[in-house]
Image 1 (cartoon, rainbow, N blue to C red):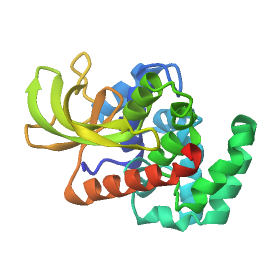
Image 2: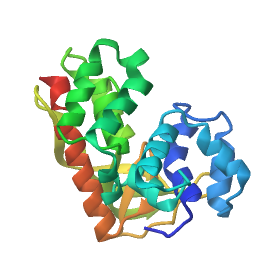
Image 3: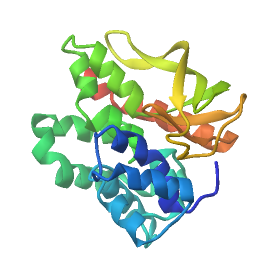
Length: 247
């Protein structure tokens, strides 16, 4: 991964859903410009705090690890990609966080979130996607196409670049499939992901053969072996933790 400061790394991964209008402040152009310029200032930090989904997780991880800055690179990388830092958030702390933060939204699903935590969940972005968001539960209702699409795109996923065409990367990755009981990685597919908008890139321009992290419709970063292993591990962990939501 590129050794950017934490706030810039956060912006790389936060920009794609923000640009689509799903979360965060309305001024998504500002995130694009910050990441393209590589500038970190008070304005970028204030934008990060406007992400009501991600920001509480960053605070949780930082507090558990004794790190003063929730936008420390170590904290940001743990949340989006994964690292041993997540193990500092024990079961009781995670359950208290889920209860305090999501009781009004989860309602009767709250015991299932506790069960997910008991199954080894940690506060990774993909845990939020598979366990806290309602999409996995909706799969059991028979509404498969849209929930599966959202789960696939909202998670942080990985793939190998096979070609670059102007501002687009052609990437080979594995989508998600639903077998009637659980979500799991499916066969290899080819997808297209944006690397730059109006000449402004939110991450390094990849080359064929690079393994990259993707969020929604964009390439966010290149992954080295360690970060790829962490992302694979925490994705599998999040899917396993979601089992109580589908059983």
